[in-house]
Amino acid sequence: MTDTNDIDMPAAGGFLAKIGRVLLLVLLGIAAIFALGFVVGVSGAAIEHGHLSMKAAGLLAGGLAACALCAYLVYRLRPDMRFGEPMSPKTKRANWALIASSVLGGVIGLVLALTELQTGQGGVFSNGPLPLGPALFVVGAYVLLLPLLAYHWFRNADEFERAASGKGAVAAIYAYGFIAPTWWILTRAGLLPPQDPMIVYVIVVSVWGLVWQIRRAD
Figure 1 (cartoon, rainbow, N blue to C red):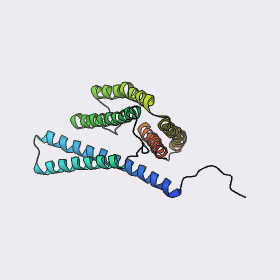
Figure 2: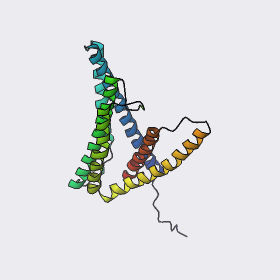
Figure 3: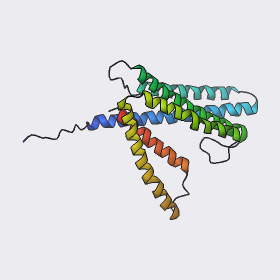
């Protein structure tokens, strides 16, 4: 008898290679963020002391070189979604929306980092108080600019790309459904500290992005 199963299962090696590429891209992105934070820290220290020493200049150059290297490797390792065909204008516009969203996230992180250096308050991953000006800028970016970019991406992305993003969003919802109540129960049992909403946010968004990139690379 012949096998009537018509479901095509991806080869294990190819699937693992896709996961490895996505994880490497994530690690390179994290490394770029840390390198940028290092550059901001060195720059802030130089501004505070009123001069830039040779050692600080070397550290600054090294941090910028690390940022550039990570960005170049991300560019080289990014998935090619054209499948050997020319990229349509709508796809280009959707890709530019994603790039603009990434740049906006970097600007938000830079504003928070500079605020911490100048005032000692705030910070990218801090729960401390934040001055009104930077707080209004970040909220405005999230409430006004990010939804516009998301709408622009959704209008221009093709069906395959939207489906990949949708599967990532479903996985993220499941992740939140498991993480939030589990952390809540373990906190009440005295096994975990109180739930930090930003930690949960980062985990959920990371799951969304990871599954999205894996599905779009299929």
